[in-house]
Image (tube, rainbow, N blue to C red; front, side, top):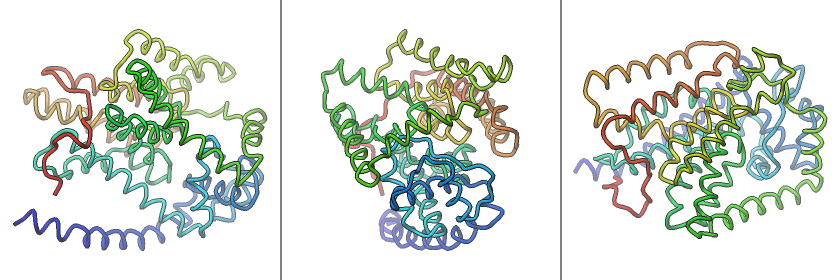
Length: 388
């Protein structure tokens, strides 16, 4: 009976909640105090410039639109994802900024909620209600920072989840989903390497075909909207690259200690990550862990980019609660609460959070110790209990 009531009422309740969120977000997310720190303005400006024949990688054109949206800036917030991301941004650029910002916020929420649901199903949570996983997702500091900043990283999370789940039986679909990881490939470079290597080892060319089809299609659409967009992208990297970013990475901290001019230090952690990958050659089932390794060794990244860590964090948390003795479980939960609280309630320059990805990786390794823990995320077709 309760299950029937839930099925009948969930969609009206979700629609009503969505309408309330939309009304509130349009007022809050475009207030002067909020927009001063909002990154979505770069996506909106880039989408509008692409639609109107401008240059989405030109600082002056971006700055003009970002100021028009209401963000007081001396320098433009630049778009650095490759041109194949532009078809995703153009629909938002076609809308007035307040409406676009609210819709983007709802899209972020949906991506996070959907990812949590799929992860809960994959872990065979019974009854298959995602509330516990949703609570973890929507209290995770990087995810909350990404929502507040209007960042694109939450949209990469469902792509990562589905690429893992689809690969065994539907490699072409996995390739299509993986194209979204190329929005910020430096965050998931070890994941992409693993998927490509496994597609070769298992003789599944569908993955590469799906990845190529998605990237080529999006690139062609970007080229139709703005024929010179790839030339503009290369010009931006050549003339004003983000070499001076003080990001929350180990490489950024090394440059802070040794000297900002040593740009090569930024890429030392990815080389270490690549060395580990070559040493262990992970399988698809180990992607949750290697997502965290990829994030901990990324050349560039901010705290909100750690949203992708949920792919490894949620299974580790579930394993910890289900299989660990009470004292150890309590200690690790308290340690996680402290870490998440520091990320959520402290405000320092990003570079001083260089440790966050590595500490999350260490926490997951500790949580996984003990009883054998399955790494994999089963496919949709595998039994996972009632979905309600």
